[in-house]
Length: 415
Ligand SMILES: CC(=O)N[C@H]1[C@H]([C@H](O)[C@H](O)CO)O[C@](OP(=O)(O)OC[C@H]2O[C@@H](n3ccc(N)nc3=O)[C@H](O)[C@@H]2O)(C(=O)O)C[C@@H]1O
Image 1 (spheres, rainbow, N blue to C red):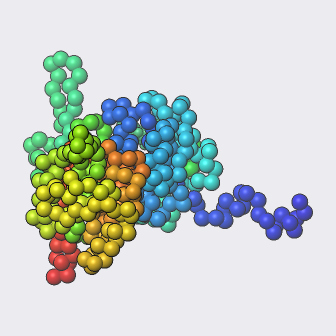
Image 2 (cartoon, helix red, strand yellow):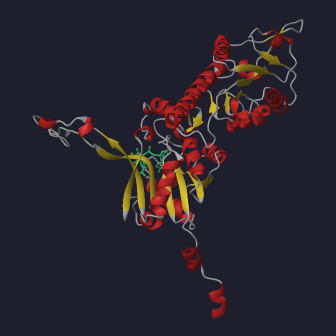
């Protein structure tokens, strides 16, 4: 190549120097988790665990790419469903003994374009995009090479007794002058939510080093699922403090529910004289009545033409022989002057997917088909015809509390 040509098209090193640094979010999610089987995709408050952090990473809008590194087919599917790219990692870095650093190093070997890694741990599901936006600035603009998350704790530590006839000693307090909580700043502890580091640090064998700083997370967002007893606590936390997406939640005015497979378990019994018998769970009838008491209308729909369904005395609108659910629901909500944001939808079939995607709140029973599960924001623990409506109603009430508290906060700010 002559010198003129060389100066016209810079080489790879010069090109790398010219382009803005590539910051990749990387969620490590191996299949063989100990303790909780397939923990990384187990539904937490109706959302697969990795879904919570992927939603925050994508909506933060600060990453050139968002990745999940996994060795498992099902995790790959869920990661893609949440909009992440997937790095299929080797089994060597997927063992119980493999460290995060091993898996991150392997990822970097395959992705030379990446300059900065934001390793986000799925085990801290209360992460919000605004945390990630602030950290990205610390690395990109403030010149830090490494930022990791911490939380402030007020815990008095005592030394462990090793051997007999020994006494314990205080580690971070003077027992004669025990500070009150408000007189003590506490200590900053790593909380395992994220580790951002420039490539050279990781290649040098360290996630924390160089020009390093911490990012202090708000205590309510600092959740670490380490052992199985952490799971129910994390579930309550995400419902109250988790990130539910860019669109603010709205008050639900209408629940549309597919009958076959949501209100019923899908079984139909036929008598000799061709009469059909279906069953539903009283818990679901209670769920419907609670929704109505709280001002949420409930509409039941079915693709089938069935007198049995119409005969159900659930005191709500029942529409049968629906051939195109989206069109029909859209028609109703237009007539009721509602927006999709004010509609909750519980479905279980392929034919429900369009409505699930459009509804402000969407749910599926645990035994819904895979495509419906992918489209829904909440996967019930209960099966269809076995309490899924009751459970979804509880979920709606919880999120409604969230909407109301958001509104209260806004009003307080205005006054
Ligand atoms: C960056 C780092 O060192 N992370 C480690 C963290 C960190 O030190 C603590 O969270 C701090 O509070 O601790 C561990 O945390 P844990 O084992 O729960 O892993 C956190 C998440 O990363 C996934 N992971 C981890 C290692 C690996 N080789 N592949 C993975 O996919 C897990 O599936 C899970 O979603 C630990 O407890 O042993 C192991 C982790 O490797």
